[in-house]
Amino acid sequence: MQGQYNHGDAYYRCRFPQEYALANQVPHPRYVYLREDALTDPLDTWLASAFAPHRIAQTITAMADAQPFSHPPATGTATQAIITECDAKLERYRAALDAGTDPAVVTGWIAQTQAERARAEADLRTIARTTPRRMSQGEITALVTALGDITTVLRDVDPADKAEVCRQLGLRLNYQPETRTVRAEVVLSAHRGAIVLRPRADTIYCPTAVDAQRNSEAHASLAR
Image (cartoon, rainbow, N blue to C red):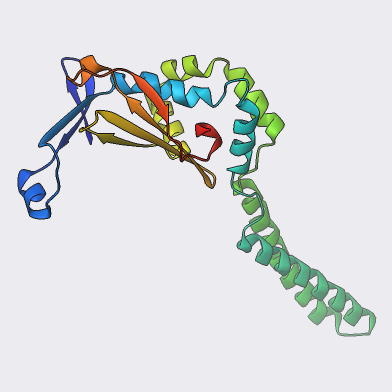
């Protein structure tokens, strides 16, 4: 579906070419419209429900588990191996000096190895700066507490920031024009949560009511 404004109101619009529907035997209305503000209120309420007092601990645990591991990547392990190898070489070169090897030759070896080690250390510092650090559950709790009422935050947040939050949550919406319902799904870590949202009747031109029925098959903390 694509965004479209009509008389100052934001809509989601889907135009399905009739020839495509006929050729592929897909039952689909030629045009589907859904007003955005019919969806945002029940969606925000659902998302905020994950931070209700009786569920917030479970949600914070899920958020912590969903973070990427902060283990150094394979390149970091390889770089550390280079540093270890350089240290071993330097020890051998010092032993060679003690054994009477030409100092001019050994000094060249040492300089070359020290330069290689310095490059590897610089690479390791770069890797450390760019590797995401996992937040602790305490840090996540403090952040959520500082936000205050999540429903208000979602309602008043900048649209671009809200879109980024939805993207990171893996939020997917699937509108069913036959039943005038929207299936909302969040993918958080390995868990999934889903509900069915019924937008307000006056915005989709049909006599239905607002509903937020949770899907009985959902297993994630956001839909229990």
